[in-house]
Length: 317
Image (cartoon, rainbow, N blue to C red; front, side, top):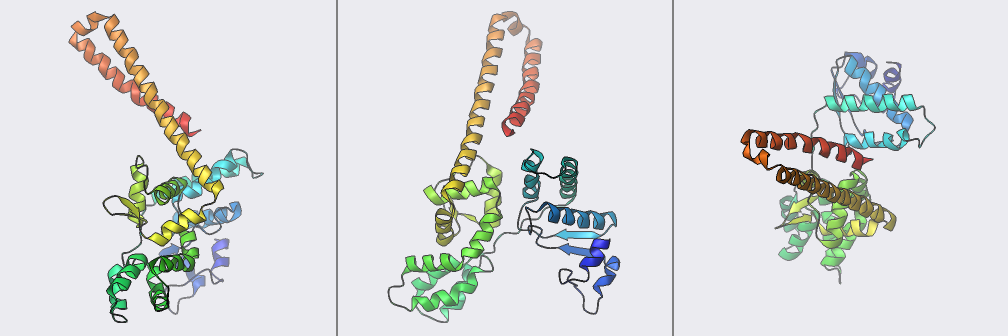
């Protein structure tokens, strides 16, 4: 409560109604907490956020949290800390980690992706020129999100200059959008970064992780053009040029590790199935008793998920 009283006196506490004294926040029913990702790697700031959200929930307030990152990215911050990578009190870390997990479990998640603004961009530029191909090229590059369409007048002005072709336009968009693209990239979890990096570098992606692909498409970062593709060329160029060799190697190693572990699990399953077949062949009497055969198959159906869970937990370590 003391923390909220202090915040209510600062510009951080934004009132939504005119003539409303922020110091009377206790009477408000709804609270919108924005930019949860700020200070993501700060243990103290995360603790402050946690206290505020927990207090509001305890007082039966309705809370909306707006963030550019996934909830599990906050939880992931605590993983290396819990493994001994900090001087912070271990009990405090465990308590905060569990509290965040419980809070996020109570909130429904709504993912809002980039909106398609291509038609609006083309319509606005058609009034300024009759060069349909140039307008189409700009629309294809800037027709996404709320930010990129605002660059259309600047890019259109550059097109009037000599030797400013489509490739020059793409590079200029990449330069102007560097900060915007950096924010997008930093807000992505590692698995989605790898999928985008793979797609940007080779034009192909490993779609075994359907959840990540679906998430990227829902965000608007990947679109379907006969196959998955990055939404525009300048963001694709940004990924290839922005990702350092060190980060690219880390993404490659992580993906290779996941793939290798998946292969090991398949081999384990095959070994188990082979063992069962040998047992059945060694005991032909089992095959003669249909009920016992069904029991054996049913037992196998129970054992395999348990083994899969054990292997999955081991692979995460």
